[in-house]
Image (cartoon, rainbow, N blue to C red):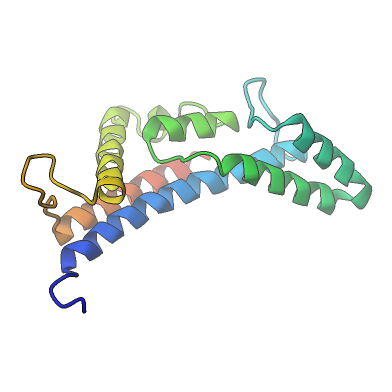
Length: 173
């Protein structure tokens, strides 16, 4: 049934999409962990730190205190994760905003002194390609209805770029 319909390029596209999903997941996890640590008093919160929980969520977290510290942490993790589930952290500015919510300021200039613009641009190009793949079937913007070519080197470059960015960012968190 799929003879001739699924080619290697589709695997390369999938790899690029999953690499972007991985950086999004990584940023979500960092923000969740740091936000919960702030709520639990294990990490000091700056005046600008915020995750935007509703009063109802804050009330439920406070009410969980009758069940002990573990219950409070579970409630905090639940409501912060629910709140963060409304966001994506793929684009460079979104990543910087997410990390600044939990006290990590100026991550791009800190992780990449003198090279932040280049790294942000590289990630932006990858995320834009990911969006074309998942939202437009990676159709070439020029008339003709063909897909934009993708080689294994394109996917490997995207994965390597994202790995380099996450490694550098992680060393400053």
